Amino acid sequence: MKNFFEFDRLGTNFRTETMAGITTFLAMAYILFVNPATLAAEGTGMDSGAVFTATALAAALGSLIMGLVAKYPIALAPGMGVNAFFAYTVVMGMGIPWETALSGVLVSGLIFIILTLSGIREKIINSIPSQLKMAVGAGIGLFIAFVGFQNAGIIVGDESTVATLGDITSGNTLLAVFGVLVTVVLITLNVRGGVFYGMIITAIAGMIVGLIDLPSGVVSQPPSLAPTFGQAFTHLGDVFTLPMIGVILTFLFVDFFDTAGTLVAVASKAGLMKDNKLPRAGKALFSDSAATVVGATLGTSTTTSYVESATGVAAGGRSGFTAVVSAMMFLLALFFSPLLGVVTSAVTAPALIIVGVMMVSSLKDIEWDQFEIAVPAFLTVIMMPLAYSIATGIAVGFVFYPITMIAKGKVKEINPIMWFLFIVFVLYLTFLS
Image (tube, rainbow, N blue to C red; front, top):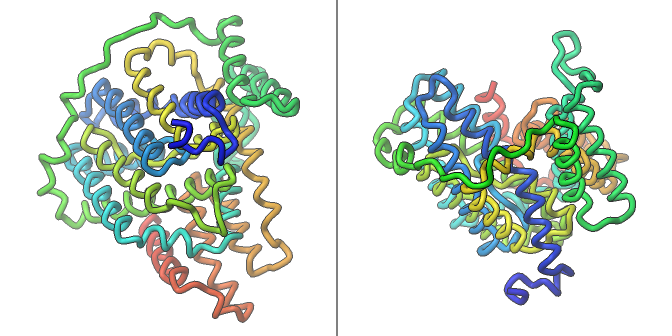
């Protein structure tokens, strides 16, 4: 195992990778509860218990494929945002049966596999200028930090100013602030795995003061998968309609560029990028595509690489064994779901905020004095939290890149693939609106 995952070359070990995998899992554990609540919301007709089991299994299998095939410390699970699009827009808004919507997810995953095996996805990622990749990483850092502030109740919505400071005297918000302080101190003291220990200490503190309920039990039987398993295959003939083609394209756009951004950002943070290229990019993209097909078969929306994997990288994760450990944790979660109740948003929010701090460090590598680079880089960074979408941030920044380069007289420096992306993103933003 040590040789297979190249622990020595990567400067890591079994203990560190295990801790990193558990840290990543804890940062992602919320999806086990959020995804069923979203997909099985009143009006969709989906079975909540089956979606819970499908979510855990899709995350486990997807992470396992990523760890063993691509050997990256990146875990996968059904994606946030696209699950809301699936439930509220496609099923409830457009009136498309959830079985047909699952077929759309399956088809998008199969298309991704074809694009990946052809090498197109890898070429696209490697054609992106290095400084835009740095902007993507920093933007994702701001995005997940913003999510952390929201989950903690530190930042809340406001009709007048869009966002404002929340009630920082409320119990859960104070617990999250406590978690941030503890994690900051641990990392400042160079404690290896400070993010992980910060989450554990925060959870224990929450139980002591009564903000987090003690687990009602330890072991429970997983809900049946029967209501959703294989339903994606029974309605494949219904996807060849104009509305469903639009739905499939949306699944494609969001997953393609969310995944690209996440892979680049996490790999960069782990120091795994080589000469501005992602080693084994084809295998990583194939793992992500295969996970979507597996997830759709089980009964959940698009499964994708999770930016929360950066928490595991921050805890020292460098190899695919981190993802394997996360996969094992998701399998265990099927039987120990009562224990996951202590991993509340107040516990995970500090990890997201601190990892966000770490990821924006890539801003220093951007040449801000070159305006033709500064504009698309800035728009990429700022639009992710403002639009609440990694894909939208990438789209806006990449649309402006060729425009500023042309204005500067650097047309020859624009990779032909970036021109293709310009057209794609213009269409994407138009369709999204």
